[in-house]
Length: 131
Ligand SMILES: [Zn+2]
Image 1 (cartoon, rainbow, N blue to C red):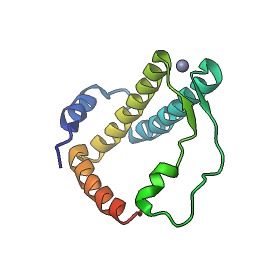
Image 2: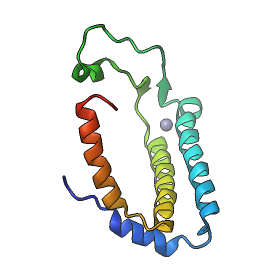
Image 3: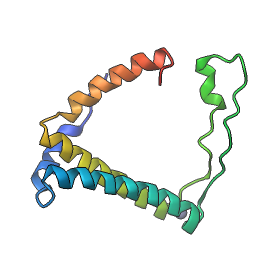
C-alpha cells in the first residue's frame, strides 16, 4: 500500500482555515460545497451540454459472477466533460475536500492514516463483493 499525500495538505488547510474555523461553519461548508459539486455536474448537462445523463434500470444478466458485474453496470453518463466544466467540477470537489480536511483537523484526525486504514477495508470488502 503506497503512502497517501495528505499530511502537507492537512497542514496547509490548518494554516488558512481561519474565518470558518468553528465546527458549525465547517459542517455547513461541507454541506454547501457538496451541493456545489452536484450543481456543477448538473450545469454540465443542462447549461453546457457537454455530457448527457441517460439513466434507466441497470440491466444485469442472471448467473454472472461478482467480478463480471462491473462490465454490466453503467454510470449513465454519455459524452465527456469539456475543459470549462472539468475545471469547475474539479474546483468544487477540491473545495469540498478542503472542508472535509478542516473537519479532520478539528478532531486531530490524520487523513493519511484514515485513508490507509480505509483502503485496507475497501480491499477486504471488495474481495467479498460487499461494496
Ligand atoms: Zn461543458
